[in-house]
Length: 241
Image (tube, rainbow, N blue to C red):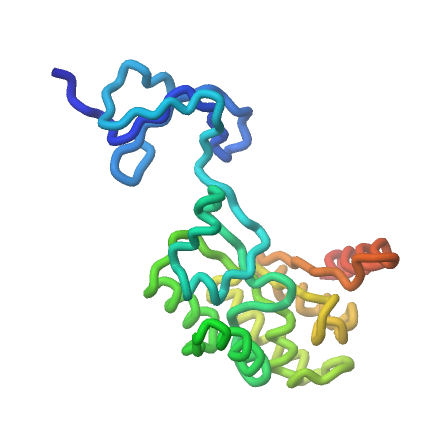
């Protein structure tokens, strides 16, 4: 009697493995929660065998633009994402992130979170990630640091350019978040308070992100008749960073 080698064997699918190589026909053997074999496994024994001919087999998709900071705490199963094959996501987009939560940034986030009867217990990104870890999550979670959070925390929602001390405060908060695991800086230049920000102030924060190996992800200022101008401005900030 042949021993069972796999708990699950996916047979005949088109494998897209995420390494950049062209898709190929391959079987995938799974034991427990791990893929343990890839190739021609038709003669191998499995407890459960699925014919996936004509289908794609992938490790999972990455949602690079998510806003699940609160909903992932409300429902860690993330069923709406998992059912689409999404296994990783990057939140903190459009200038709004889960941290840092200080001053007006905290006040505004609390209003949003109250829709789900959630009261944030964290202030820093490190503290937020501890909450995610403690509750568990079905997804791999990454986040950017929102420019709106930085600006509201340092300037209280005021319009205009930041003072040198306010700019330094934003840079310090961004550096801390990057050290604690943020992937970069996001901005929502279409919305307040991001719409108040000038290119020089944004570029200065972009340089902080770049110094820590982070990226800059802007929601640009205009998506209508001034789209081209908005794209050019975003590129200027990226180059200056």
